[in-house]
Length: 166
Length: 166
DNA sequence: CAGTTTAAGTCAGTCTTGTTGACATTCCAA
DNA sequence: TTGGAATGTCAACAAGACTGACTTAAACTG
Image (cartoon, each protein chain N blue to C red):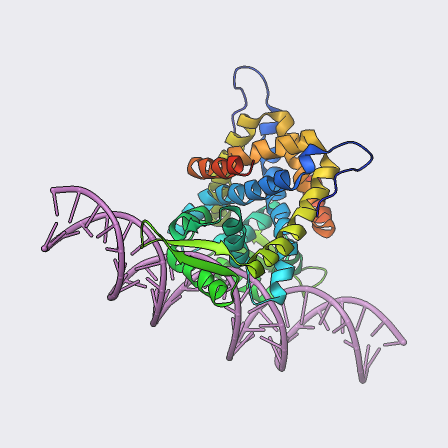
């Protein structure tokens, strides 16, 4: 089931047991990763989907619906429901495109930006604690493995976002 | 919003921008992480919830329902729906406990084990590719950060599982 | 032994978030 | 200019999570 001789060296970190531990670590860590924002959202009438939309609108202001749904990996219908409530509640503003009137460009309002800060402060706090505990070298490895784990198409999107942020 | 002087050194890897990149990496990578098993499950009439149950029953054969729902972080009603279909379909066997007859101990049948292998082979393949691309040192860092990101209670559960597997 | 707690399962109802299908509007190119 | 492609909206439905209330059986405890 598992062959272990890639050129003579034994790659201990590639055993099935090591891989399975990584899989479980990923599962449990993701729970922690979402726990703090989830708690905040539970109080308001929002869920994780709203958080994700708010996050990326903040990240790429003026993004179109189409662009956003590719980033989020959901159908436009699914995203639309979320966006509708956010617009109704005055957290997101949707402007008809100037050059192409089919497009809607999305922006956070002041209230939307405030919620975004609240959510990402919570999420960053946990991330910061984890990074601090593990140290810079571990963080570099963490980022490297995560990038390798992405689908090619998403990795491109991710890197474009990364570069836009500095 | 962000103070940066913990003892005089500047911790570049702890800037808000670095943290946000980590958050987005986590989001996109998790999509990749679940993509392959999801594709397999879509063909059958199962979802991610079934995968998780099968994974942990395989990992800890004879585990009780109560133990499993703590591991998965769902309610018994939610888990019960999933388990019922798996038992009906002959993938999971539920045995009344010997010492405590209130408990049900869960095991994969041969068919259940076969599906588990199919799913985890797919998931491990991606993990293996990512590990191989990033290298052993990066993998160590990856694991370290993930562990730090878990809630304390889950980290304990995770480590218990880890030790049980060698 | 009686009463309480625990483990598991069930029924009913709700919510979030995903899906398809149908449709309107707008743009663009043959 | 007309027909197809792209963008977004509305409606209906499904999966999978939740709460709350309840039952059954077994184990524990005073």
